[in-house]
Image (cartoon, rainbow, N blue to C red):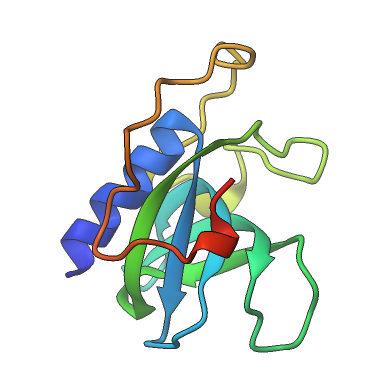
Length: 135
């Protein structure tokens, strides 16, 4: 399962598309903008995301930055909605935590701004997000 989720999240990073995910087998869905995928010092794969909608176990209201452990993501789906990298909110692909294990990150240039990639006809992944999450 983790390999399929990883592929969906990598595509989200590459195409700057939002993803819906379920974390820790929770039924609630979170909508995130995946910015970077990397291995931490212990070798665990982490996805740095900007959560824009959905559940927060801490009760915090989105939007906010949130790292997700790949092994705890139980489902993911690629959405049609695109995003612009959150540089003004603090994202930089040159952060020290990415130096040794960066798998992928949103491109530094804004080449796709104004020309979003062509979305698929339906969300991709093991589940379809509820109607309230689609735009």
